[in-house]
Image (cartoon, rainbow, N blue to C red; front, side, top):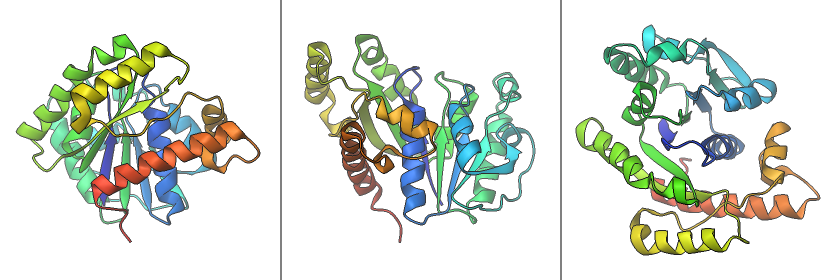
Length: 252
């Protein structure tokens, strides 16, 4: 099982949207996909509970008890966010080892695991980075979001240096891009100049077709009769082409 953590300790860059589309793309390739929702807003859980399969395990149990196995279900298998996750941030660091052990236990049953993270640094985000093979960082091209990039990169590479040396940073993916905004275009140019080696050279535009698609439990590229959805689909597919190239391809 390859584990992909979608992470940014700043709220607003659309982590959940990216994580859901990534999981749906992998599921469409016939892969057994496990989705772990560690975000307290639980938006991914709301979408996946309606249209996909929910395991008997909830996210907090991965930190505080042994989980031997989860049976893969049809389509995506969800370990949903639950209210008890709030207590994890007040727990002892030993919960990180339990989380890692449980993800290893589940690795024989799935091809891929996608983890959606909370928008704050803490034990849950650290746990998600600790078990990841790959980490993807969506970013929003607004000044207040760009200000947090250095802190975000320090977090990711700090975990890589201390606890997970094999962690593969896939890069920063510009999301919610407004092509009519001169400020966002200027910010993107600045990012290319300063972070070119850490930037995924693709972008996802801000389009109403994307949340509308997720409301109906489908990725945006499956929406028919919408030029907005077609363009969004092309953007996601180009981004995923680069991402999976950095991962060495989708396992056959």
